[in-house]
Length: 142
Image (cartoon, rainbow, N blue to C red; front, side):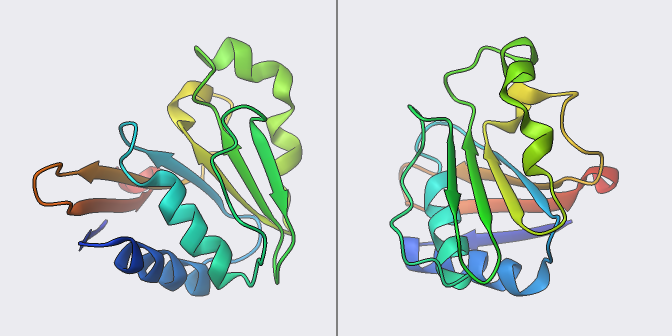
């Protein structure tokens, strides 16, 4: 497990860029954290590191955003779903391909539908200091 603190969006982007350099095609990232914790900011930094020029916004109303860079990025936001039953019909498994990266916000809402080798990124924000604490680990390291 890796624990990292960031104190600004720039530092969050730098952390995401480090991970983008370490992770290869087929990686599925499960992002966890309260509303406003920094999940989308993290994905924006990850996308920038993949040379994606399009602005990355939270796809809360569209659920899935697809972006092309040096690797394809599938950004999935399950915030509006109540649980795995609703996620079942989305065809999530189609996005777990070996050619791209899939980043899922509110991944716990698709519990049981995600691949076993997930990379978890848990984000806890301190509203007083603005610091974000990231716990990064694989499923079998929890």
